[in-house]
Length: 580
Image (cartoon, rainbow, N blue to C red; front, side, top):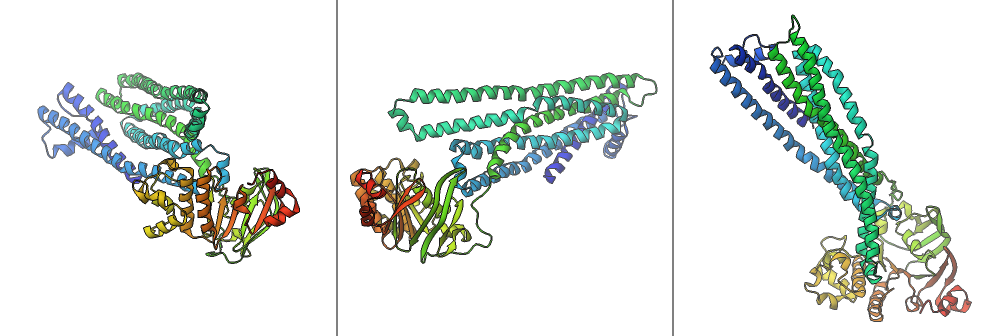
């Protein structure tokens, strides 16, 4: 940035020298020589006269024109160099900002996104960061150039006539204040606009995700009406913003020209006065120089307008960047690379904001156990397993692995103990190979194929056009539910972790797919500590311990036979065929 300022100053000096040539040119045209010049021009012409004879009018005219051409050339060379230096600064600022946003999205707790619309978060990460380049960085560049231009030109004008320049200095801030008042409300309106744009992004994202339901329920008209309502509100607000922002530029120009006219009147009276030190030629040069301030002064107004619009984007970005990282790694975190004895939940209570989901949970899971969590929807089963790898932190109580609170472990090493297969299958728009090896590096294809065979996925993967290198598209929607699930199981197998979490991994599948997936899961569960959430009796009846949850509390625990014999809640669930 120091280099940018230096290059700007050099280009402005050449620009001022170009304008200064007006005085000797006028004197040459009207009086036939260049005598009695202002001190700056007199010095400049004395340097030139060393090389060229300026006594002849034709020589002087040629030299003045040549100087103007050369100084314009050098001025524009330095302007280009300024832009050349600025280009990587601008692009790097935006790149770093996007990186910060993406990193923050990765490390923020899952609970943060529970209260956010996904489309709005995407809008902040992509649209708002780009808005920074269009507004804030442009404004910053304009401020540097415009303020330097005004400052250096005013310094030159002071050397020409102090009285007239002091008068100009009184007028310019008044014009600036008028522009500032016009643009003052832009930040608030722009923030509202970006929030509405985030709502539009969210609606589009929800539409694409739920297109099958929209078409199936013949709700296209309803979806279009909702979108049109949001879009109309956004467009109406944008009109007001554009009109307010667009007013600043013509207003700046009008005020600038008005100031020039006032100075013409005031300066003209000085020139016409007796014993004036301001000659007509120098006054015309003065006006020529002062007129060069009009555009930079207008740019200051435009920059203020852009900056205030950009501030709203910055506000939204910093709402994410400044969000609390509630789940953090302990400063003196202990290493953990294996699971040796047990997981123990001690008086665990957890609440989403003020809504309690789990209450006073006490549970011990020994190494090698298969623990089944059962209960009605909303009982807290998925929340309980999400606490183990610290997707959320307990509100009260503690969770210990091998006798040590999980908050004291390195969080990445803690999570490396778990593999998760859930009903919400997450696949990426990439190859089968890259989805299975996701997060791992340089995995041999033989190891991937071994995981594929364990997951009963070999036959259908080999039938794909490019086998493991076949791109499965967005979220793998080109595959059946059973095929997607077996890829996710292969991903879990490849990691070979000691603890496996199965969150309703066979729900919503046809009988054939369920059998293939269940066979794959049976292989994966061998020699691993497994926590299962399932609605199928066949999945849970062989569990070491079945834990029945209701309204966030453990109401029963024991083996399948023990719980059936007790004729309690579990027995009722089996009798009403919820587990079949």
